[in-house]
Length: 121
Image (cartoon, rainbow, N blue to C red; front, side, top):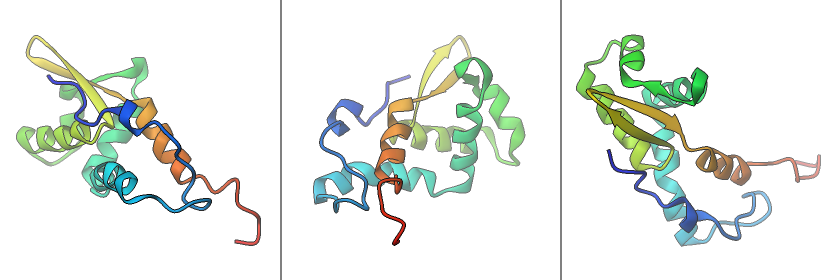
């Protein structure tokens, strides 16, 4: 399986929480696929299952049973998460194992951090 489509090193830079400084147009374009991927309830659940998996990764075979969806549909959702740079994967024999890309979630968390805002908000 290919690595993430979004290069996390290209996203590292002078990012500040949105409550401190508006995003530039190119920053918004770079981040939008991540937020779009998380905007689907199935993908949000898949991400949470992968992130909370013991051992840091989970086999696709352990994800499919939690949904009333076909295997190809689950694979599509996982592909969207992978292309958004939120998860990465490795094929081992017939199975694919998924793991979280911590830097991606850290970036989103930092962007949405309101801890630096005064209590006036």
